[in-house]
View 1 (cartoon, one colour):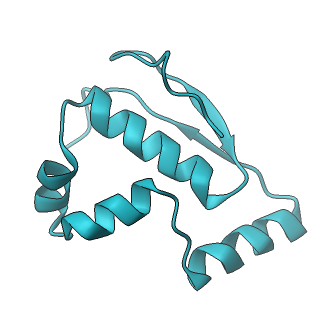
View 2 (cartoon, rainbow, N blue to C red; view 1 turned 180 degrees about the horizontal axis):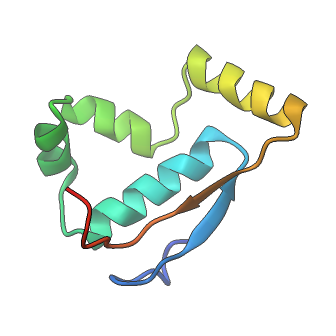
Length: 89
């Protein structure tokens, strides 16, 4: 599991995602660094807060499970990186 206790704004941590929980940890860290609550981010994205809670908890649905099995089988590595990009909308 990713330990995001050291992450601060303007840092650009990277992680190779091997399972849905890895993505969940990055989403949570990025949201917290952005100063957003789960409810605020959910509202911006037109998601329910419950969905955000599940997403950050790494609750995997069948789609995600199959996606990661496929990536693993094909030897595909997914690297996640986040940070503030001035050009992003």
